[in-house]
Image 1 (cartoon, rainbow, N blue to C red):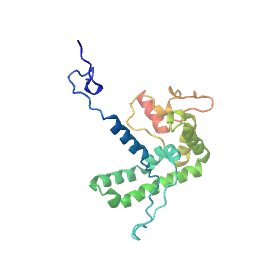
Image 2 (image 1 turned 120 degrees about the horizontal axis):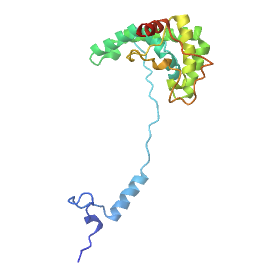
Image 3 (image 1 turned 120 degrees about the vertical axis):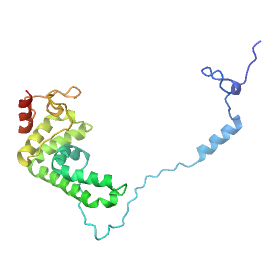
Length: 212
């Protein structure tokens, strides 16, 4: 005859040689549950703001003052103009052995001023196109392929007024860059080519002619 075993002595069917499970007595289990239920929840939702001013010898720099969507819209133009400052800042942080926040303040101020100048110039010369693009990004979960049509108009305006062009590095040669393709496979809405076409800067147009 097969002997019945208690629940605490049963072994797992997936691990026949596993030791029996150890369960708490019912009274002790209910006691611990009551203690956990009576404990007050603790949430820390306060923001810590350090009001200590910077030393007087550190120059004050105004923040860029842009949210994520405008920064994403202008990011490639910021990279085109501010690449040298960005490289200096990253090199300084690499060589500072963990003290980049203190030793690279001068390089960081240069990056901030350069990015602010790009945002200011775009607002001055291409405000309508810039606003249309970053609004589309804001409404489309910051997905660039959803907003190619306003992006092409912005790229054209920025190039004609600021001589800055969008360039995505490390793309395969001989292939149409992803930002210039008229058909986006995963886009929610198909691009109407009657409303606009990809803007190809002269440098990329010359490169495509040489490749062909």
